[in-house]
Amino acid sequence: MKNKKRIVIGLSGGVDSSVAALLLKQQGYEVIGLFMKNWEDDDTQDYCASRQDLIDAVSVAEKIGIEVESVNFSSEYKDRVFNEFLSEYKAGRTPNPDVMCNAEIKFKAFLDHALGLGADWIATGHYAQVREQDGLFQLLRASDGTKDQSYFLYRLNQYQLSKTLFPLGQLTKIQVREIARRENLSTHDKKDSTGICFVGERPFREFLQRYIPSHPGDIYTLDGIKVGKHHGLMFYTLGQRQGLGIGGNRLGDGDAWYVAEKNISKNHLIVVQGHDHEKLFADRLTAVNLSWVSGLTPPSHWVYGAKTRYRQKDAPCVISMATRQSCAIDFAEPQWAITPGQSVVVYESNVCLGGGIIESTTQSANATEAIRLKHKNEE
Image (cartoon, rainbow, N blue to C red; front, side, top):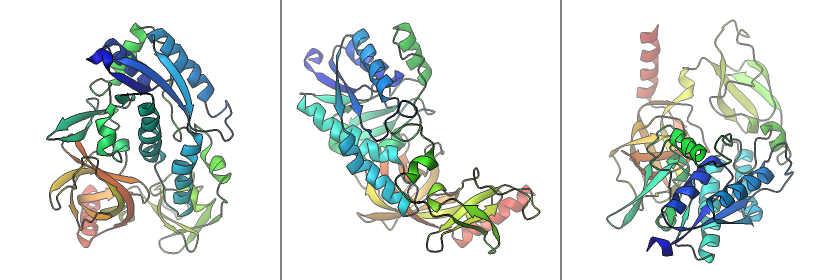
C-alpha cells in the first residue's frame, strides 16, 4: 500500500527537508517536493536566499528522483503572518513569527495545496513526532532534545496532525548530516537558516523601521532616574542586555543592565541592574489565544512542565482559571524574563499538550521572598 501513498513534502533547500524527502522516497512512498516562496518585499540576495534555496531544492529533488514544484504563498504570508507580526510589535509585545508561520502557512496554506495535488499526507523536516492514541493524535518531542521543535508546532490542530509526517523525529542532527553526506546530497554541509521566518537574516532594527515608525524615548531605572535614550520600544524585549547603550558603571555599580519593563503610555524603557534582579522574575502568567494541539484541554491543578521560550527547560507548573480563551499558569519557581507576545507551551512528559500567547505576568509575595532568599544564600 505504501507505493500508492502520495506525500508532498516541504522542500526548503536545507539539509533537514532534503534528508526527510530522501527517507520517504527510500520507504517506497510517492514523494513530491514543494518549494514555498513566502516573501517578496525587498527580496535581495543580501538577506533573503530564496533563489539559492530553490536551486538547492531542485538539485536535491533531481538527486533523489522526485518531482518538485514551486508555489508562491507570499500573499497569504503577508495577510496571515506578517501583518499580525507587525501588529504585535506596535502593541509593545514580542511575537514569535515561527509559531504563526507554522500554523498559517506550513500547515494550512501548504496543506491545502498539497491535498489539491492528491496528497495522502504532507511532511516537513521539523524535529518532532506524531503518535495516534485512543483516537487522538499527539504531538511528541523529537528524540534529539537539542533540536526538538515541538514548541513551534503547538498551534496545529488535530486534522493537521493527522495529515502530517515528521521523518526526522527519531534522528539527531548529526545523523541527518551524515545521511546527506553519504548520499551525496548537495545540502549536506549547508548552514542552517536563521532570522525571521521566510524573511531572512536582515538587520532587525532597519527592517522593522520600514514598516513601523520608531519613537525614541528615555530609559529609566525603577527609581525614576534617567540613564539613557532608547531607539523605540519595539526594538527591545524583556530581559534584553545587548544594545542598550548604558555603561555598567553609570550608577557606580558594575552589573549589566537588563530591560525589565516597557511603559507604552509614557514611551519609557525601564531597566534594572543584574541578571537576577527580582523585577525580572514572575511566577504566574496569563495566556490567551489558546490552542491545545492534543485535542483536549488539560485538567486544571495537575502538574505539568512548561516553556516560555524555545531553549528553556521545562518548568514545573499548574494550570488554573482556564476558559476556552485564556488561562493562568502558576510556576513552582519564579521564571526569568517571561515576555508578553511570546508563547507558553505546556508538556506532559514527552507529549506537547498545547499553549497560548503570553499576555501578562505577576509576581506573588512568595516569589519575591524566594528570590530574596536565593540572593541571600548566594552572597
